[in-house]
Image 1 (tube, rainbow, N blue to C red):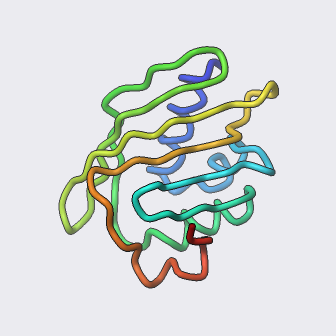
Image 2 (tube, rainbow, N blue to C red):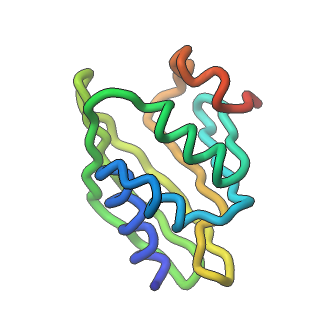
Length: 124
């Protein structure tokens, strides 16, 4: 798959809460960072837990655009939940095996992460 196809599959799996497929798209030693909250998650298992446990409730993701090269991609998405809709820009790096090795996730404004995610991340 191309980097764009991997990222499209990633977002489709996230929206469907298909954590098995979602996990199959990220490398075992992947790194996730969210600069606004200074959160960092290392490794596939921790990242799966971060997503499955860190975002409870009824939410949906709509992809507006994905652009990319051979081993990198960027996406513009809309995350919607009971509190409204927020746009985010996410940058992805892929390894030679086509798995996502790094994600940098940008949201419009800095904010403190919800208390329920405190044990799921490392603050920096």
